[in-house]
Image (cartoon, rainbow, N blue to C red; front, side, top):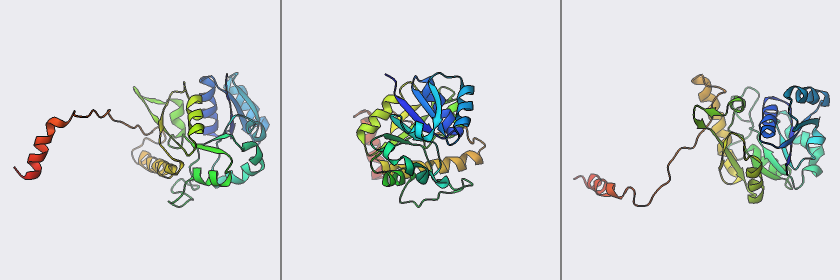
Length: 233
């Protein structure tokens, strides 16, 4: 059975996420302050799984994903929907950027995800897609490499439900731990934006966690050399 994902916002992130979820077989309600705008966009997208509506319509879905900025009054915009958000999995994609993307409007000891959870304690906040710039959704693979989405939450069940609805999407999802780890992920996104502009990658760039499984004993053969070097012999 398909889950409904309500996306609030018809900007570059909201539209791309709607397409991604629809192409993965999920039903999407794309909500806008202006229902006529949403209707025009949905008509152009030509996907049966996406329907248009208002923010109120989108908030009726099982999963709610506001594609709005904290700086633009996200928390106050959601306040009238408080009762509809209770118990829902809230997918937080926001980063607390200032208006020119040069810094954050929040201090180092908190995150956008934590501010949302504090304001709406009965929601089940899952932070995701924070590290992904909008253009990555147009072509998620970099050559043969699939890039990563870091996922955080203090609610294990909500995180598991999130992982279930993203199955089939063209990204790899990494369990990045507790909600407070959003502080690091959001800052990583600020850094990637700076680096991307410096090296002319912006906004076509993303993070990838690379590694190999550690096998006990695999490196034992190097132990004598290490000991020898440390002893000065």
